[in-house]
Image 1 (cartoon, rainbow, N blue to C red):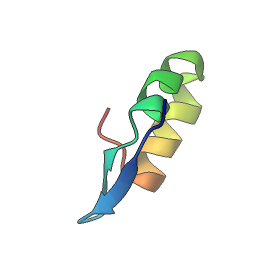
Image 2 (cartoon, rainbow, N blue to C red; image 1 turned 60 degrees about the horizontal axis):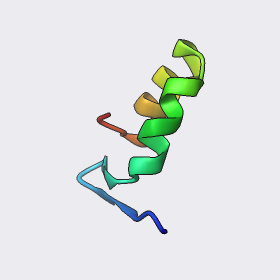
Image 3 (tube, rainbow, N blue to C red; image 1 turned 45 degrees about the vertical axis):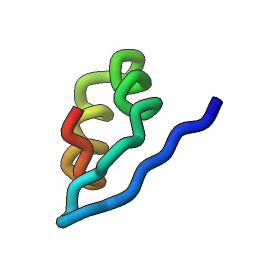
Length: 41
C-alpha cells in the first residue's frame, strides 16, 4: 500500500494517510499542520 500527495496552489492534494492521522493528533497539532502545509481534510 502506498500514499501519494502533492501541492497545488498552496494546498495539499492526496496525502490521505495524513488525513487519517489527524484523528489521533491533538486539535492544536492537526490545526497547525493544516495551516502550515495546506491540508484540506
